[in-house]
Length: 148
Image 1: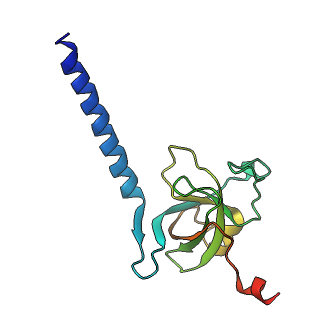
Image 2 (image 1 turned 120 degrees about the vertical axis):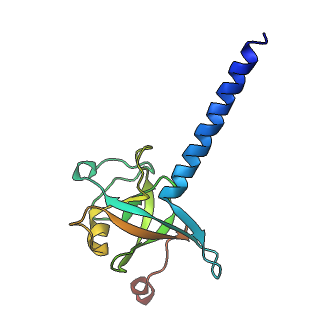
């Protein structure tokens, strides 16, 4: 019985080390901060855009995916969350809804639709560094919608 205890301690130590490594690597991918003035959550990371093969398929939220909508896939934020994605390089931004998930091993912050990639000005690049600001669960009121 005494021989099993060191083995159990070794296994527990290995699991703890794996947990620390995983959490450290996740934090190196996504820098998470809060604005002191507004208290909003802000994330920085890499964005890509969906391949055409996903067009017409069902997303994790149950919606049908379309390259023409302003939506995204994200593993960090809850489904149904509205976010403002800003291209760090050129300052262009878009407001999108999280309605899907990325592959669990994907190291990117968000995967955007082609319409969003065009709006942010990075479609020809494929990948871009982005700033993601969490807006909330309710759809934001845009200036055009307020005037109608």
